[in-house]
Length: 609
Image (cartoon, rainbow, N blue to C red; front, side, top):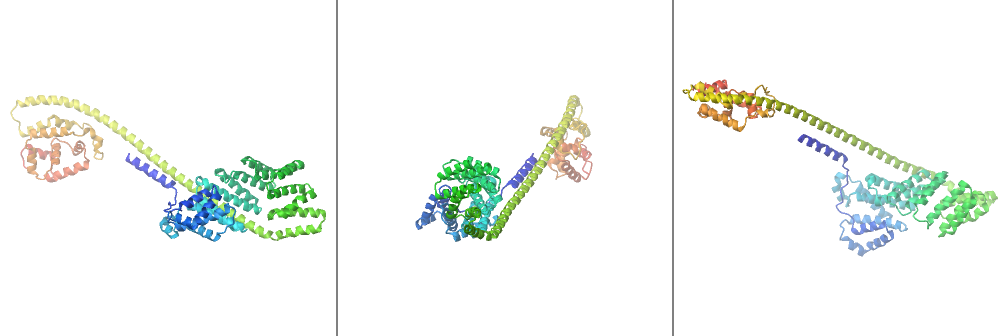
């Protein structure tokens, strides 16, 4: 049974070792409670969090918070990260880029520390090292990417966004990406979707918004987060000519909206109206809906968005005069380069049909500026595509590696469990067979012992009758006394106890436990030997001063004619133990035959040889 438990604990230990996750140690010191509270509030109320942070950054606020945090360097970098995030969330320009990048390098240094050397490394970077820093490091890369994007540095911004994703996905499992972490990933994929959309990279844009949708389902960025993802995916399918698919996504976006009294709802309806016109060519119905949407516009920006759609519909229906009324207003007032580029193409086509050379030249010159930079845009698109492909490939490689490790671990555990089950089954079967064998042997021994007891009972009766007759006879000769000893019931019982049982010296004495001598029988044997040879102990001790008490028991067994194997069974000792004891006795007696030698010195009064 002990072996079974040992194997069981071994398998459990292997199972635990194979499945134990490698965890970063918990930080010894964390940020101040004030910064943690600002961080928590930022995700729900960025304006309130910004006001509290401004108060914290004052001298009084710093002094009040310093006594609850001894990790000032960590707090300083954490503060710079929060400043950048709250500036962005409150629509302010990023003014602390240098300090933000120092904070990003600080968090990077923490995450690059090898775990076996964490205590020393933590002292080097003077900050905590744990999974909480992973999230801060990813956020630092994300907000640094926002800063690059604000400066129109598209490629560095993309690199930072992808780095933020890699940091999160490498350090957190899917089940851990919940709450603010899921919300953060949704924000990051939204930013990537906007970036790729601005560069007319349809496939990448759709993929990023689809992943944003997944994380919005876990923890929405806002009540409109899921609808926003569907809408942008629909736009990309619309641009790529997949009109039916685009229509489906627009409808899903409408279904995901919590309310309809907002400009986002009107944007979706406007896109659907234009799409319905392109699919069904029902100009009047689509235009009626667009005019209603224009009447609901809440500001000039929304009006220009509706002008763009209405002008496009007039352009496609070749009503150029009407199209000019709307498109020229968009061209003059809209600052978005991509929108002005699209409008300029429409206006160029209209004035070419009118034959207005001056206007054709004006818009051709405008478009030529972008034609010159088209080579640069293709280069940027190529670099962005490579970055995203590398990110996806690395993610796929990591997933394949994880699956391989998982399968190897599973195969290993299955193998261990199979071995364990085989061992357990083998032990159980062998124990059952051994138990059956012992039970069968015990039954045979019990039957033989019962037969011997019946015989001994008759012999005892005969011996008692013989003893009564002998009491009336004259005193016996010495050798006759020994013969009388052998006729004692205990002597006869021990001599006849083994019957036809074959005793093997290789067997354990436990296999003959039914034949063992009891303490009462051993006492009775000593008593009858003293009865027929009162000087038994003194004679042997006189001849052999070094003889032991245990040797006296062996001498009694020899005296009544028992073998070494029978002695081992009676005393429940290994045969080797009895053999060594007998060997020592023979050396003591001069290597004679023990039984005959004992008869001579005890009953025939002969001296030792």
